[in-house]
Length: 152
Image (cartoon, rainbow, N blue to C red; front, side, top):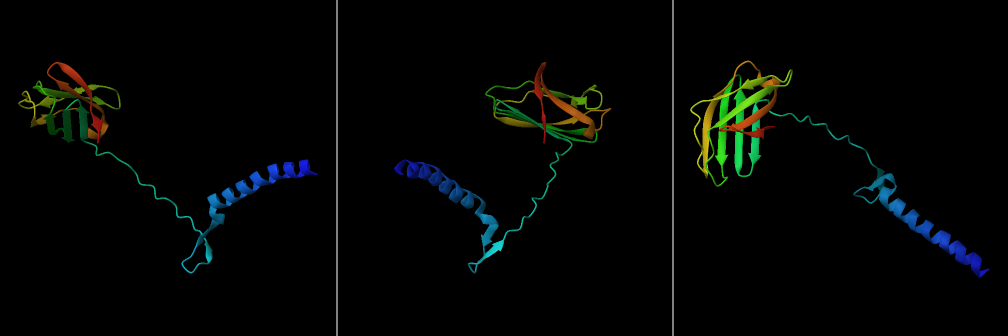
């Protein structure tokens, strides 16, 4: 008889623990009301919020350099914030058409070096591509291709 009771205890004790935990996790499907009585819960769907990027804003950020390219129509601005510890070569950029991969060179008006701990803003222009068809914008500093901007 003692062996039978030990086997039952080994089975029943874990079942009670799992039963209590299961009821605690689900809450029994009821939420207590202010008066202390239980009421059924209602599920409110989570709204879907579309995330969209502004079509003409691109940012490059790496190792103390932040470049922000704002494009509207076929013109815009390129802001270079230099905290790299050295002077940066004159900036440039090019765009790739998302439809066919064609390269569209941009022009930076009066491009000049950006000293360390300075921010400079340049006017830019490009042609042959609409902003919403830009698949990739790439930052160039002097003759060096620095890499892709991220659409903001």
